[in-house]
Image (cartoon, rainbow, N blue to C red; front, top):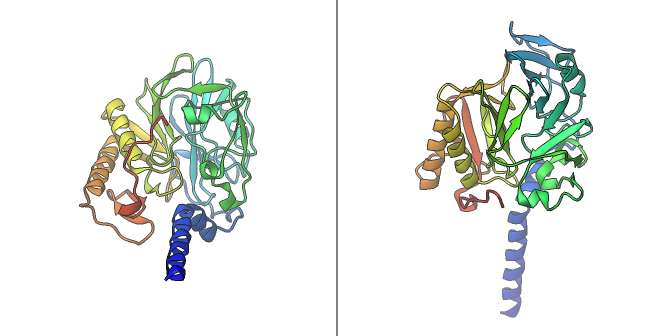
Length: 318
């Protein structure tokens, strides 16, 4: 009997270790550990120009540009927002190509790089910037000795494509709901966790444009990764709805197909919030075993953990 009890305990510990390490196991199993092959170039439409054989540029309005990487497997988009005194580059892709040349072709203003969150496909990694600004959260600030922050595996996930953990020299801390002044333009820093605890979006107070990072974009929204939280996702949706206007154009960090930059509307955020409410109530249908796939609308769907692993308690500002 003693041996049976011991065996049960050992099996339980093994199962629990598998559950606690499920993200690393899944990512390492599904990834090659190398950069993915480039996609073929496609017709990007009349509004988009090719900078070279990799980057594209699309003007979204005066002094506002979407910089695309449509040949990268995740089809990332970064955004250059130019003011009278400085510019902000919101995200920088995975850094397999240097985005700085594109930025410098569009502005002579000093540029501050702002990652929407710390995943490797947004931080630029080996690409360096003169100024870097990141979200000011207590658990991040306390790790940044002399404003130098080395990311963790769970924050970065770069091992999936062979990208080493970067170290960021932070020049500016962005408190949630604070204002970044670019001179004649102001950007509100909206805290939009859920995809990760460190996710932010930028709301242009003049144009109403919202640059949403991985909070929302056309395609699959990932809410099952390390640092993901369904409760935080609900908070983020409510925060955006409380601050953005009905006519806001929302530009995300990924797309699923050409042409042009990925654009959504505030109605999509409302649909996301409604889906989250249904998932929390247990009334939403889903496909797949892990992750579970919940349809939000015709343009986007949410990939989440099974109900028994979903985290609905708020972790914001931890």
